[in-house]
Length: 86
Image (cartoon, rainbow, N blue to C red; front, side, top):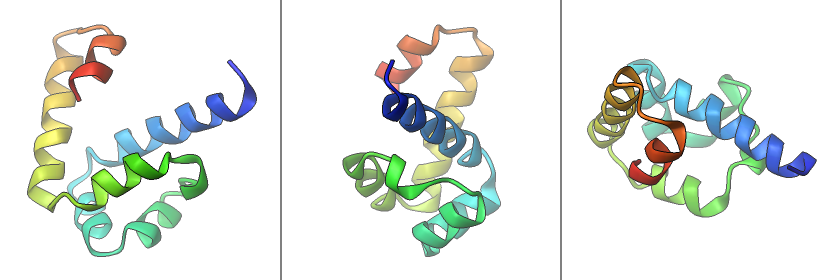
């Protein structure tokens, strides 16, 4: 894996973890760039199409996305399957 791909993966993981927090979801819905900066997530490392898709979601939709991920992880679903589902 090249350095940029590793950085993107790392930042996406930080974003996924942050989306588990209801306060982050609310902040992200109000000010995506500010919320990313607050969590020290490098916006430039998040693929633009991913960020655009997340920005279009309401806090409730972000919560549903986070809940699905949490349930899949609790069920020990392999990460590659989670990525394809969420």
